[in-house]
Picture 1 (cartoon, rainbow, N blue to C red):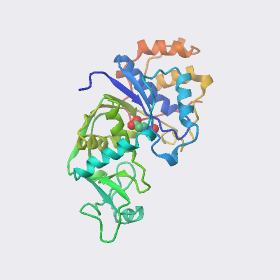
Picture 2 (tube, rainbow, N blue to C red; picture 1 turned 90 degrees about the vertical axis):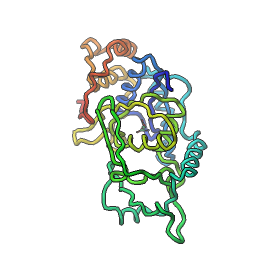
Picture 3 (cartoon, rainbow, N blue to C red; picture 1 turned 30 degrees about the horizontal axis):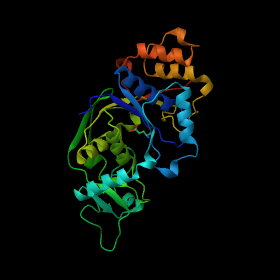
Picture 4 (spheres, protein in one colour; picture 1 turned 45 degrees about the horizontal axis):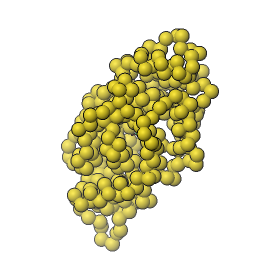
Length: 302
Ligand code: GLU
């Protein structure tokens, strides 16, 4: 049983932090601190082709300048490959993971439905074994014909039918890298995370993660998905949409903006405050219940 409240912030070092990442950091941090719990930072650098040199150090430096204090050493996913391999072995032994020979094109040609996150629903071609003469490229996890539901602390009850909406999903990719879904589940368990607070862009991934936890006999943490910051075109702020990096020299006002974004009743006097003063207010004034129950909110500063 997990006695301590433990939260985490898990950025991918594919570029500098932007306002959307700050919202996730602030929400998970204050939720953990309000519960008297711990807050860990994990660098999700498992997708090595997407890593940008210097980004991990830059992210930690930014968190420091913004006044975040994390517990324990930062965990790097690049140092955890053996643990992901062991989890995959366990799933193979249990008959839950299977090798898949399909190329992207073959899946695209045969799949009729689109999965929840815009990918393709895997049609199950290699489920019963590799087609004759073909070698495995990736490893997939079997899903079942049932609904996976959970009560999100912000967005309310969520349910997904994995077989229909996603299909058997990838644990190890054709390029040999472990997939985010496997890495995140293995590490949340390893770090004893009890409470996950992150952006609502990951809502649709959560049933896959809960299914993996069940297959690996892990406990399921609680989930809270914060509204994501979107631009005027409705796109999530991200590196792809050219979101502005956070500005160290404006740390206090960016923190205030993140708190306002999260529905907090920030007093006027905090305009012009220092980083320390903003956190002093936030520790007292934080209200989880005030977070808007919406998956996205337009953030368009002038
Ligand atoms: N590394 C993921 C991202 O930056 C977040 C993973 C998570 O919070 O579960 O989008």
